[in-house]
Image (cartoon, rainbow, N blue to C red; front, top):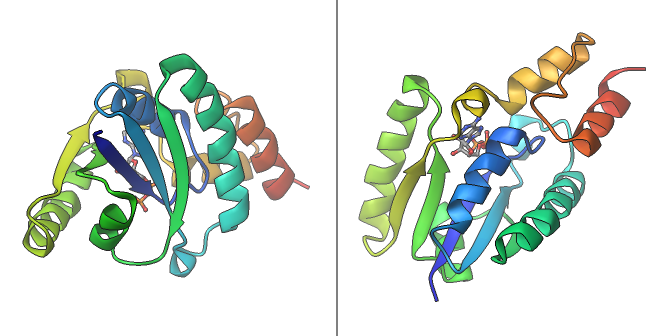
Length: 164
Ligand code: ADP
């Protein structure tokens, strides 16, 4: 059984993330979505809220793809998390050149920590590529329409949190 780990902060989950999850499902038998607690990033949504939003979207993706999707919060080293969940591949999304530098370093370091775990990069559909959780929060906070970037449930959660 091939297990993939897709780690991130998912604050909140966007259509860009969902695009990558869908593509990841075509590559593995079980997909674990690793939700980084990342309290130092000062997330807008706490861990439980992020996990709930991801779980809801995962249920639909599981019905669509037939692939088992597990939501797994983690606070330890990514490589240790991959070992904990039995993942042989780590999935990451690549958006632009800006992502590349950081991801390049991460792969180099992680490979030295455990060479048996391969990192695979996926690109979202063109209209999902520019989406970032950070910009979605900024746009919504300024009362812009983010319905093209997140699901209706996440949109409601964002409005509830950012707009009085
Ligand atoms: P992190 O804190 O790890 O960057 P994110 O939730 O921002 O967490 O992103 C998780 C993963 O999803 C990263 O690999 C990121 O590059 C990828 N990702 C996020 N948005 C998109 C998108 N629009 N297209 C492709 N990949 C994306």
